[in-house]
Length: 115
Image 1 (cartoon, one colour):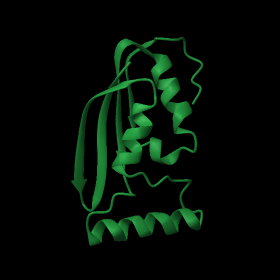
Image 2: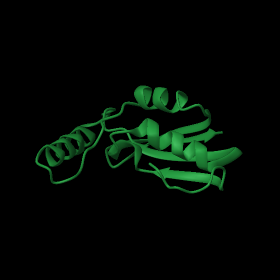
Image 3: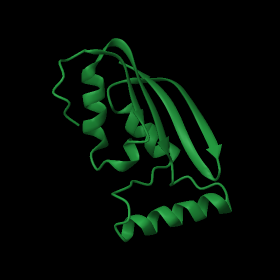
């Protein structure tokens, strides 16, 4: 959330499976934007546990929810594609590419944002 690195020190920033585990994703996205040079890319990969498309996906979501409830894993946010896309679009960057992936019952959104 606060790397203490200088502004515009990275050509690209990768946020891989982190947005769903932070309570302050807006702060994290602002820091990624701050670190990225103008016209640089912020690339995200986020599990969208709120978008359940199969029985296997529902089972995984329930398992994750219970593990979080019993403090076996840290905080987790259950995004839907729509809510995550809204969050990314309001970060002050522009989504230039995205792809939905379904794998083993999980749904993910890969997005590339331009600063």
